[in-house]
Image (cartoon, rainbow, N blue to C red; front, top):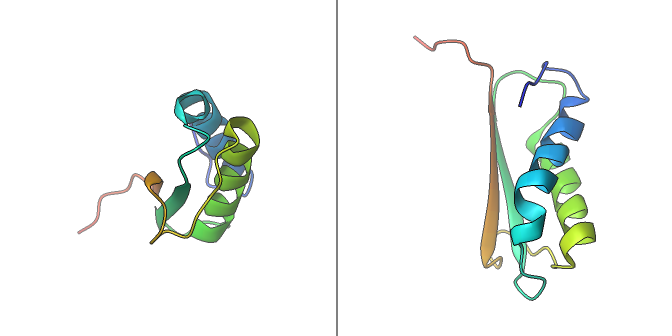
Length: 85
């Protein structure tokens, strides 16, 4: 997946989650989405969590839960690719 560091990256992340995960999800198993962003970007973890969760719920019928209660977790990580010193 190629991300540009722009606000519309969230759409690409949602598309990737849909392509990779939606068909694997059990509608009877609650899930949660956790995102870590290790770069200065125009979107925040909450933006990704909300968008991915909503789309996966629409496609799978599974209900999202708070992180602590979710039986399955979808993890997203976004880094800028630069070396840290």
